[in-house]
Length: 68
Image (tube, rainbow, N blue to C red):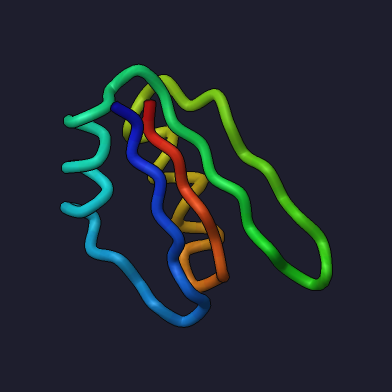
């Protein structure tokens, strides 16, 4: 079953939380960010390190992540 979470702006999740989500659902991931009245969608990550690299750019923003 997929994992979806909402992370409020200003909250920083430890990397091990992202790793646990990935290990439970390793078939890909993505996230969307609400920033400056725009919705930014990043999806199609098939490697954890690529996901984390992009996620870190937005980690302090209000976002929703999905692991499948």
